[in-house]
Length: 281
Image (cartoon, rainbow, N blue to C red; front, top):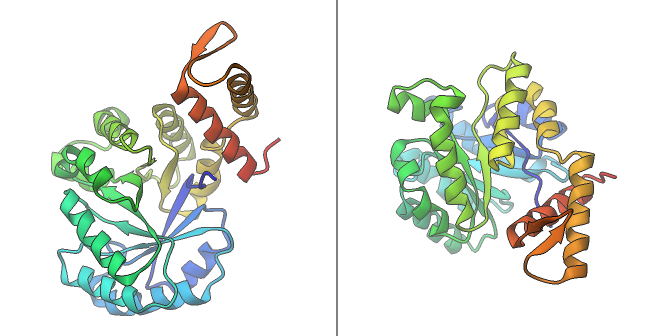
């Protein structure tokens, strides 16, 4: 069944009351943040609170992700050592600032040693990460989604965080994700008071193939969820495509005078699965 990862909300682990609040909100994924959102002096406290929150809070049907520090840092090593001791693990580990396949394989080896069943959301936030994305995606079978972070990337490039400036980097992410069929997750929209701009960016991202968006404030959840939810017309169209495929058999099919091949049929199936998860008519 298709996972719902339309909205991914970041919450700092040193603010446990915010984690408890996030568990009641409409986000599809709660990311408990140990990295950039937590100051160095609060890392130890945040690590302890993250483990406690994952153990004690009822997140209902939401996925829970843990954003660790980079494995090349002492804080990152402490994060993984702490995770190994927790009786209850998150659903996802969010790997920050990944630049090589080797980094992913290190995390994979550590999680395998823990005998934990969880997936990776890989964050790409640098030019090196963009250039190596095609190697990063297949580095581990645990990689189930790839997320773009434009703030650090734009700072490195000396560019603006505009749609046009970031377009080619977003396209590179889509191409990398297509290699294994994982979910591409778009970068956060930084102006939390600009809902119109957020909706415009969501629309463009979805047209490119993105399936969800990182969120930095609860006010962004409803617009993002709506933007990445199939419309009634899309669901009807998808059902017609799947029905035609079942009638006409495998391979290319003809619907309304148009040739549709396997990727289109698979896309229609994903839309139907999402609609079923959301109980859409």
